[in-house]
Length: 367
Image (cartoon, rainbow, N blue to C red; front, side, top):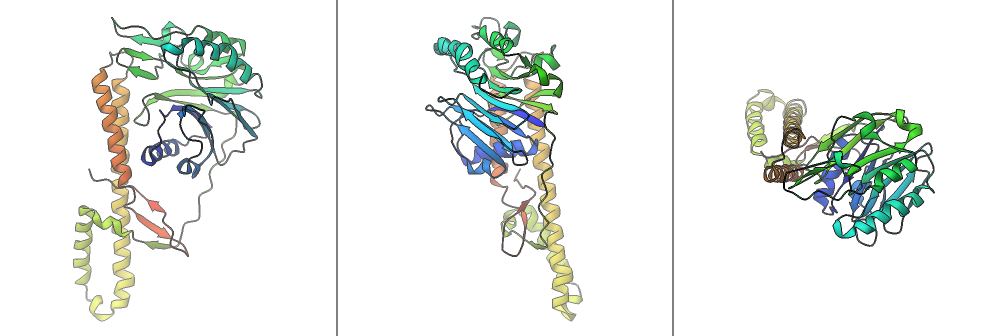
């Protein structure tokens, strides 16, 4: 199964939430721990996941998204929304969001020394703890430019993880890699982490970071074999195809369609038997052109998305100094491009069953 931790920076607009959903679905995550959550329910995310959210009084809480193929036994949260646990039977997943900022240093220390151990003591083991700790575990988790003030280090983080028999999955699998997840003008730090109980440490086989347009943090991905992966059943393919006429707003498609109509109208069959011409030539031809066009457009969107991901990963390479203005501009450009692609997502071919029902296929975007 694949699990991830994402700080979503209080996103609430339908467009940004749709981008988040697309990112999670495309990566086939089974369990997603979210931080800085401002919603208590979200129909967009609920369309594909079971959503358990606790925004807390400050609208900066936590949430856990669970694949609909997994059965949740129970869930619980703390009153401030900074800790949320869901139990899947053999394992419990906890999403954590620690207080941030220098002025909350004492509050953060109390959170790690008192609140977290008390909460986890009531959680059924084994545990997978994921989230934004807003603090580094040791000085090696921080890179900074010369002349800048270092980030606050909370020494008790390592203490509480050791006392609760938790293992830092990144350090266990990739001890020589830095794994920074938060980038700022003065450097970067590894403040997003995944811990697990020692008893299930061997179940984790992979952990990576992904610098993405969805959030200002790098996203942590991990693969484990704690629970068997149940494939999502594919819905039956509808038998009747219908063209979404919004695709006609694309100039490239209109040119292809106009050329096809001109050639098809010149066929002798049209004069002999127009009904046969319509069913055997015209309608199959329009369907073929529309589906081919949408597949090419979807491929373009995928390639451009991967291009932006590669650029973001290259610019945040820990072996080179971070160019902060370029990084900010690139991340914003990537986000704007995906939002524009999302706005064109409705221009697709669609099918229908007995009742007209939109099921979009492919993605289009005016480049």
